[in-house]
Image 1 (cartoon, rainbow, N blue to C red):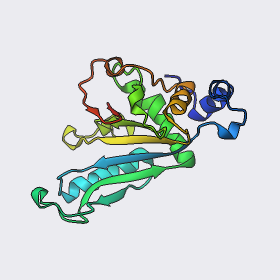
Image 2 (image 1 turned 90 degrees about the horizontal axis):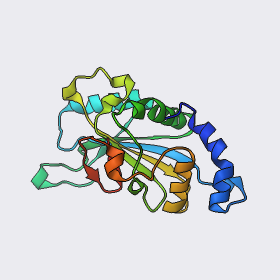
Image 3 (image 1 turned 180 degrees about the horizontal axis):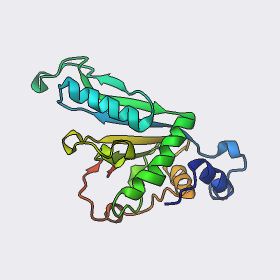
Length: 199
């Protein structure tokens, strides 16, 4: 992938997008508004494990992650209401662009045989979601103990009015989202999640 910044790609794609979407006003073109990162800790009740996930997400995103508690108690899972089941953080502005630039220019090139995303990663609201199986693909945490590895989901939220507009937008800024799932994953050992591609 090119090392050109996401901002530059968006500027460069403006003319092409206007023609493809039939839009005259630049303000009407799709834009990235925020990036949401979510990591579930599942049944883990280990305080140190939760602290590790929160700390590593902060290193990766440059922003403190918020704990997410269970909305209700579930006896069969021995889960109590309010118990921490994951962490989430939302990036906007420059911090969002810094994260996306590292993701596409540093992280994805490090993933073996990465070829792009399947169009199913985009939902009907125009948002793109991908799953990261191992947080250690980020250079900030590359030397982690394999026993501490965890995954998380990244959702890129846009102002696109529908899936078609979002797909055109992502392709215009070189996100490459029209690739069949079998090719997108190459020889990865992967699992398919609803509207989410996992690496």
